[in-house]
Every structure is written in structure tokens, then in C-alpha cells.
Length: 241
Image (cartoon, rainbow, N blue to C red; front, side, top):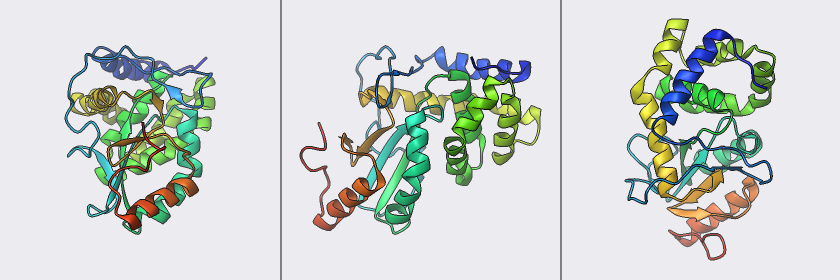
């Protein structure tokens, strides 16, 4: 069982409860290859920018790149952690840095909700240029963070994350987790996930089409380069619904 110090428990419960008041929290499905969202779907509606880059999105890559990949993921999803630890470095080197692809990251918290919400809120509070650094750190150190939380030492780990985000004191952390604007951004990401009929995380959408193929860097790099060379704006048949 995840344990928290009293201070972190209060803060994390505030963030996760505030989020839950407006949108259901995705949960894990241990029998799937992905973390699956089991939330009750919101009434169908057209959410702006559900499958395209939004002005407030967290993005890396050239704004003239011909391909845009949107990925929903959670800092508490083991499969997301594996992908960002093992595949993401190559994706950055082969596709993003050369200007072949633009990458949009959207947060979708999964259980344990307290850890996910604190982690995402701290990333939201970081300077915009450091957002991905905070996400990468949590993905790469997810196991260590979980182990610390199980020992009741989560606060120390989140103090480290807070410092990376520029949160130098407990007061800074309190203010961050109480920031309704940052919380609303995570809520909006969940609304867009519902509109996109997301089934689980990590979830990949390429130029607005859901991608259901292999998620390793080699496969994705070949696909994106082929699409770019052929001037394709949609996924080839067999890799989308």
C-alpha cells in the first residue's frame, strides 16, 4: 500500500479530490498491455482540439514539422514509464530534433491517483521549458518513487521533483497544488481523451488518427519517415481504426 507523510497526504488528496470532483479518474487494468481508462464516459460532445494541437498544449519539435504525434500518458503508468525510458530518447533524436515530427504530451492520471496528480501538478507549475524535464524524470524514476511511497517516504521524492520544478519551499508546493488554472489544464486533457474515445494509456495519435501499431522507437521512426517522404497526412491502412 502506498503510504504518505501527513503533509503530502493532505496535499495529494486535495489535488486528486479536486480533479475527481469534475472528472472520473482512470484506473489500471492489470490484465492489459496498457493502463486502461475505466472512467464513465462523458456525454458525447465536440471538445475543441481533441485530436489536434491546442494552444495550451505541452509541445516539443518544429512548428513546421509535417507530422504531429499526440500522446496521452500517466507518470504512474508502468507501460508509459517503459516507453519514455526506453523509446523516447531515440524518438527525440531521430524525429523531433531533425524537425521530422512535432510531439504533444497530454497528461491523463492513473492510479495511484495521489501520486499522479501531485506529479502532474508539479510539472504544470514548472517553467514551460522545463515541463518535459519533469515528466521525463518521473517516468525514468517511477519505480524509485513508488518504492519510496510504499515506505512512507514519498515526501522526500516529491521535494526533489518540486525543486526541479522551481518550487523551493512547502509554501510553494502548497500554492502549486492549489492552483486551479493548472488543475483545469489536466481536467481539459481528460475531456479531450474522452472525446477521442481513449481506451488506455499510453495512447498515440498521429496527424489526428489513432495509431494501434507497435510502439517501439524503430517502428515509429520508420513509419514517420515513410509518411514524411511520401507526403502522407494520414496513417497507412492497418495502423488506424
